[in-house]
Amino acid sequence: MRTWPYFVPEGDELPYLTDDERAFAAVLSEATVPLICSEVSDRLIPSVIARDFQRDNGLVAALCLDGESLEGERYGLLDFGVHYGGNRVRGGRLHNQCYDLVDRSPGPPLDASGDVAELARQAARWFEAVMRRPVVLYVWLHRGYAYAVRYAFADTQEIIQHFFRKERAPRDWALRAIARGRFSINPLWMQVHGLPEPDLYLHIRGDMRAAVIPPGIRRAERHGPLAGPWLT
View 1 (cartoon, rainbow, N blue to C red):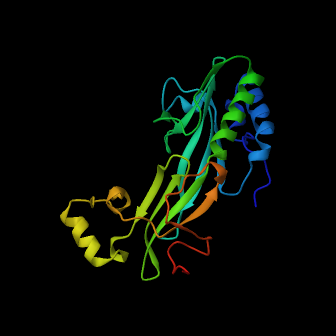
View 2 (cartoon, rainbow, N blue to C red):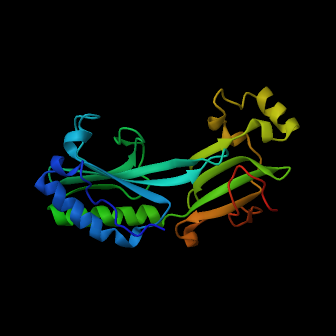
């Protein structure tokens, strides 16, 4: 279980951080201690490096929610974080390779100006709001194995990521889906609206009091790798 704080600069990063970036990271690191958990990892990228990806990037403080694929491999589901620079902080979903701000925010809007310490505290509150959102894993089963899974925010049903294994799916249904053009070339990105209702769901993290689970979907507990047989 992880116990060390987020956003502590490592040796390779230290020479590139400005004084303001060091101060921002220090306050942010302390303020996010209550958020530490094993399924979320962190990344701190000085602005001078982040600008190699995008000219307007500032210091990047990112968190990555990890999940599992149907092959049993750990997988980065959602990268989210803040860009700090020029007395401004912005938050949102991040590209998983270059850490640019992309798409809509997974939490409340964050685009604020002010002094270093206050902006770091605002960023910490934003991270808390994102991590408080309930995340669930919906599972589709056939003959004791999962053939599709979907990670989603359970308060809005917004899809975070999904995985599909055609060879595990019910044959009759798969043939009908193929005929309707609901399979893509890449099986990870199969059109999820073509699936029937999930068989069950698992709570991954966040506050389930805000969750709205469609009726008829049974709650279950994680019992092992997604690639293995499921206990029903």
